[in-house]
Image (cartoon, rainbow, N blue to C red; front, side, top):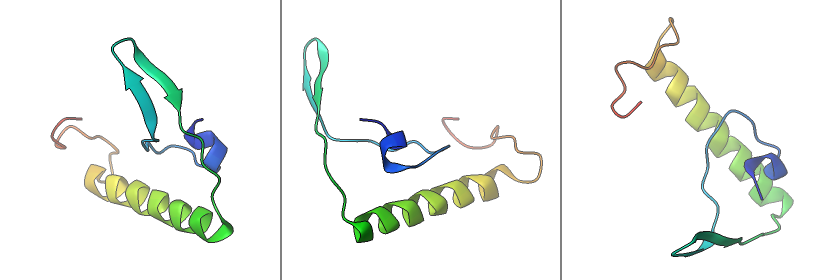
Length: 67
């Protein structure tokens, strides 16, 4: 499963996984209701806007810790 399955682009979100010593064993696939999909999309838009605001007009993220 990827965020593409949730119809999202240009945003990084985590999804529940089963992890072992070997790494990701299985991704837990969940079906969202229409309301949950709307809420997820709204959250993604908020994240994108916040990052854009932090980046400023030049689009650089040099001043963002960990970027």
